[in-house]
Length: 119
Image (cartoon, rainbow, N blue to C red; front, side):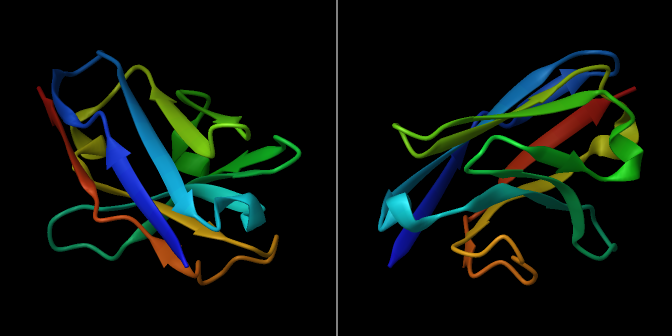
């Protein structure tokens, strides 16, 4: 079994930055795909980005170069660096992971961390 714990959310002004972290425990060595989804109030949960064990990453179109994923395999931790934040980035951000590259839907989820961007 795998547990995911997020941290780093908070309140930031538009144009600011935040760094989210997600630490995996348990059978974390088995996780090939790790990444993030988000859910804004009244909206469906949506994909943000994914990074593989090889550190190859892909992102949703709305990221537009503002977010960067990184991964420390030794620490079983993934990071989401978010820059140029916009009010529409306000959401609960969920860490997700799976053993497979074909990770949809992800097998494991964190509890979520709130990101609020004020205008």
